[in-house]
View 1 (tube, rainbow, N blue to C red):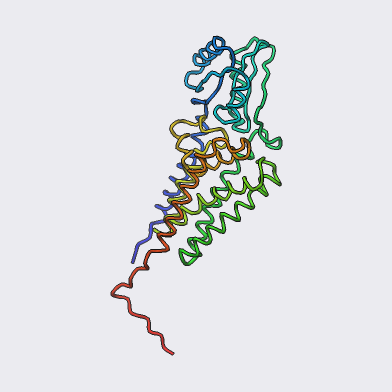
View 2 (cartoon, rainbow, N blue to C red; view 1 turned 30 degrees about the vertical axis):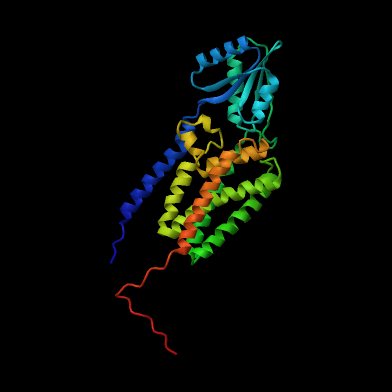
Length: 325
């Protein structure tokens, strides 16, 4: 008879898990700061070079700086998501271009940095080139969308693993969950709460792919190794993926290389892809799309392997079941 862990061991394990969760969720937020944030300085070359030197001296490593010839080029770079913002040098003074649609936190930091670099100015013009939704100017609602996408995928995986009897039924359940979740999520986020601009179908497609990228790997892994697969998937996608997603700030504001790692996990890729589709007409959408697609295909491969796997042969000590009339 297999012995069960004592209640004391289970309680201590739960306490350790609690401490790990506090660390995973609080540590990135406690260490948020600009790190190689792409920023443009637009204007005459000599003046732009002086601003670049001043920024490097005042905050080393905070910005990844590039110079551009004029304001038009700076606007194009922001709209293409090549940079988060720009400092434009004009005869009338400095103008700061930001994109709160890319990250309200970065937009605020750039505005503050520009003011610090020119403290004697009567007022620095700040223009939001790609603004966040007026109903969510600080981006808190947008950021709050990512955790439910992850947790609903984990919940769907747990239900399908425990209640669906076959790998085929689980595969069908994952497909239905992804499609239904994709169609319903923008009804709440876009139609009701107005958190995500863009077209309904684009937001629905991103939501469906994000749901699939979470539910398929966990359900597939659980179909291969049993219920422990749910725990493994939840640890990776929830404890690592969500706090490292950069949804509330931007990956460049997280400690590195963790911010970059977060973009290779479904929560971070989903946040980036949703921003690209909702605010930037799909600019820089390819990489996060491929990340979500890769996780989805991995999960579908797990489910296919479980579907094709032969059932275990009965052991020698098992007696055959004889059906009698």
